[in-house]
Image (cartoon, rainbow, N blue to C red; front, side, top):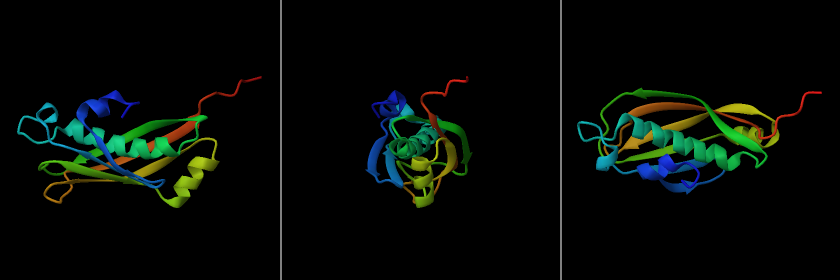
Length: 137
């Protein structure tokens, strides 16, 4: 959360992190609620983006930048209470991130609320590119 201030402001908490999996949680607090007392749509999207971004950011080499290319979020039901978000990549994705100069990966992401159901369905497409562009000669 030190790199992305908004995640810290919202209260996103990293629960666990491995090279292929990240779990974060977000408590349903007043400052991030919608008009009916549930988590605001943008706060749930932020939690999904954060989980996937933490996972990709941890794996991208120091010489490269992680960049989100697209976020697709479908709001399928009212959110009940707090949420837990799990993001994962495959071992093949992990290898590609470490070996390829640039590329992209669709990160799987599951958002579960306190009822045990998914209030949103989210797809996050992440890319990685070198920090330094090659000069054209």
